[in-house]
Length: 154
View 1 (cartoon, rainbow, N blue to C red):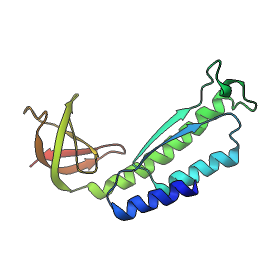
View 2 (view 1 turned 180 degrees about the vertical axis):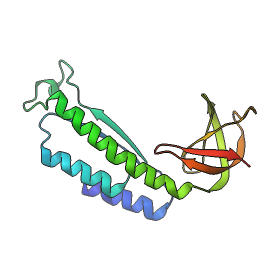
View 3 (view 1 turned 180 degrees about the horizontal axis):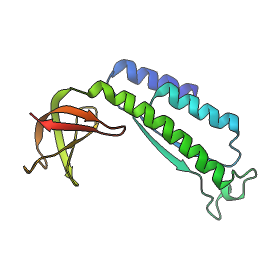
């Protein structure tokens, strides 16, 4: 964990607007309450923009399937819920700095609305009747959500 923290610190000092992403598995066999608290502390310290949370699920014929101290499914589920709540708060607070930002974004997909990415790979939702796919457009961020920004064409 110390090495990971050092790497994140170097990246953030060299690239101030970097988007940090990491993964956590909740409920791996033998995970103690103290280890889970350590995971919470780590997430609070590095404040990742993206956190992929998985609950451990034993797969037959794997070493982990036969390991002692399997963490009960409800415990892993609750740990996952706790981490999700903590990360949602972190992500929302981090996205507040983008409110009012203006800049170029690249439109990469169409779902219900257009999805674009800025220079830090932040997802930005844009409502428009224009065909924006594959275009670079200028936007202003008008709203935030925990995991994406909402922008208007300018």
